[in-house]
Amino acid sequence: MKRWYSLNDVERSSPVVAIGVYDGVHRGHRVLVRRAVEDARDAGVPAVVLTFDPNPAEVVRPDPPTRLSTLAQRLLLLESLGVDATFVMPFDKQASRQEPAAFVSEILVGALGASAVVVGENFRFGHRAAGDVAELRSVGGRYGMSVDAVPLLREELLGRPDVPISSTEIRGLVATGDVAAATRGLARPHRVEGAVVQGDRRGRELGYPTANLHTTTLAAIPADGVYAGRMVVSPYGSEQVTYPAAISVGDNPTFPDQTRRVEAYAIDAPADLDVYDTHVAIDFVSRLRRQIAFTSTSALTKQMAEDVDAARVHLGLV
Image (cartoon, rainbow, N blue to C red):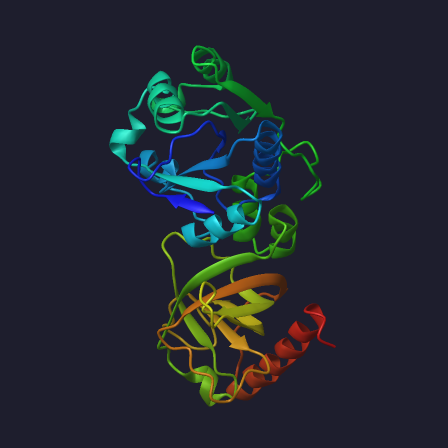
């Protein structure tokens, strides 16, 4: 898959273009992108995704949303859907002031030469989100560009089949710790990434050394608790290695004056495993329990052993 990060990189053709932020590349996003790929194959033209970085909401809103994926993960997920190229359009204050008609004429038609676009039925674009599907069709039609507005995917995640799958809904699930439901919406476990940094080494002293993550900006971190999941070392490198993991999120209430952390214990990892200063991804599979304070380190150690056993069960290792 080709990756374009500026207008100077773009190779103009007559592609079918799927437009969206696609944070998390959830199941609804996949429907849109696959539709664009199918339409492009039928027409014998390239399939291109136009996405944005950062998320426009981070630029125009005082309370930006958390991120369900890093840009690197987003691009890999989009590539897995069969697109030929992704244009990562830089988004800033200037871009936020672009009028809808100008976005169509300058970006979709002028830069990409789009023959067709695929969007969700609720698609909004341009300054103050003034443009909608009707305007996209109206302006695009002047240039011979067709518009395929795809109905949103509605499937039951939390007993509400009438609510479409969306990044907003999935962020809410992650925030409450319901990572199992988030997995259903994402079609994969929710992932948090970051560099492994030095912690207080208490886990090592207790016999359960943990990787302490310095998480990426605006990462959607699950609610405090203990989780079963996987730790992926060097997720974007040729040396990628995956370990089953027991994961702790929170301030470790057994010990005072702790900051909120994401820590993972790699189950069955080599005793000499050293991941300090390494980029690591943590995939959350299921929540085991809430965070609680223990009256002694022996009680905590006993519970950690039980958590590891429970993680093995949830991950299908026993």
